[in-house]
Length: 371
Image (cartoon, rainbow, N blue to C red):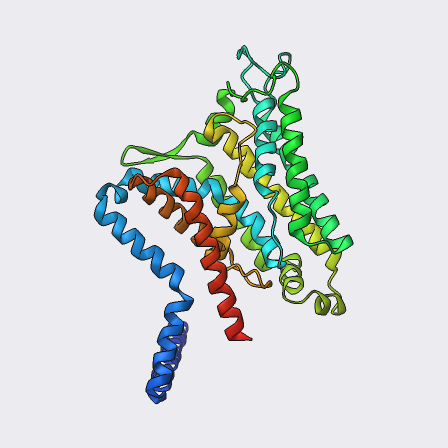
């Protein structure tokens, strides 16, 4: 009985504390001058302008196209979000370090091609490697993860060792990877063609139904994406490596003085990012049902936009996994909504560019206000 009372007292104390805090905030608002109140409201609107515009756009689309909120549409949005989450989780680490990674999309393409080539059906007549039976899926996952890690190692090494800007380094590796993709697709009997005819074990492992809602299947890769996100949350929030990443992103010199292994942290962040790109590529190969030289094209722009929308700041040292998930989800909602409105696909590039530009401007405004 005493234990129950103790819990009730603790709960009551917590609610009392919240009440006092709200009361204090309200009183602080009341004490502000009219001009200060106006400034606070304007700042609140400007700092959250991206979210406000996206929510308004969703409301307008839902009114104009009621099917936008149907079960099929919502499941499609969830599926697309799950497919694009790993690359965003990877590139977010580079942004936390005040950098970026524009090789991400090509890394996705290369790993998708490797996975597809190793998992083509034995009976498919146009196999890239005719004598090769489909390899075990765990072996292929490890293979593409190793390729992604190697790409990340190269990026991280040149950034950490020679203090080159990540944009320059990843621009270089982007071109190198694209060349490797073109050469790889020329191997065997493929002749540069799209890799298709994937083994059912691969496509079922990724796109097979996890369960159904209203008769509509949720693909298995949604579960994989949730697991990947949970692992990344633990790495970011519960490990020394995660703390070091934010320390280096906030102030590299101060982190170095305080004993943080800056070189190892930067290389580690890019290796982890490379593994995330590889997992994205592995999922994409089966999700789309094929892989080609254009697979992964411009995926990095979507990932960067999602990260910035989700609060991962280019000034460094700031970002949350929950924000990244929110950013990817909001971006996919917008893209699906624009498709419902039959917006020209070419306009999507303009819209993506505007979203990134506006999100970065809002992010910088918040930074300057804090400074």
